[in-house]
Every structure is written in C-alpha cells, then in structure tokens.
Length: 102
Image 1 (spheres, rainbow, N blue to C red):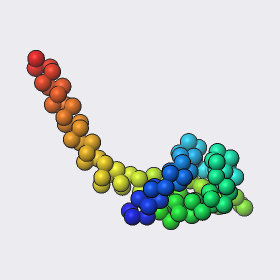
Image 2 (tube, rainbow, N blue to C red):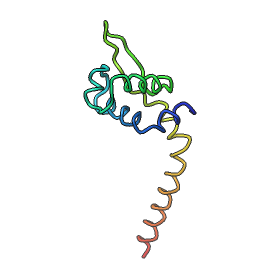
Image 3 (cartoon, rainbow, N blue to C red):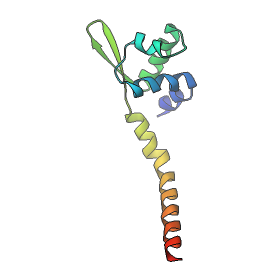
C-alpha cells in the first residue's frame, strides 16, 4: 500500500492515471497525446504506476497497451475511506429521521 500512496502523491501520475480511466487500454503514444509531459516523463511515471500495481501492461504484437488496475485504489477505499463514509451516511439518516418526526 505504501507504493500506491507514493505513486498517487505526485500530481503528474494522478493526471496520467486519469487517461486510462477515460479510455482504458492505451499505447504510450496515445497517453502522450493527452498530456503535457515529455514521452520520457510519461514512461518514467508509468513505471512507478506499474510498480504500484495501478497500471498493468498487455503486449499486443509490438504494442504495449496500458490498462488501469483499480484494485489497489479499492483496497485504500476499503481500509481508509469507507469507514468515514459510514459515519456521514448514519448522520444523514439520523437527520432524516428527526426531520420526518417533526
């Protein structure tokens, strides 16, 4: 999980992750077309995202296709975010009950 947080800490990598979310399965050239980063920077950041298991690669002939892997983000949600959502939902349900009782 540390590698995921480290990878997500950089705004360029978060921006890069947005691209396969919009259209999953892109080549390096396709990813570069949508970003204001050099090809070398995109490649470097893709390697970090791949090490964090946020991107996975599928070779199609000579083309390296990059896909978003949402599983690590789901694990972060399950461990860190969902428990805070539960409190908000319970507070909203309680508020609704109070308003209905009036």
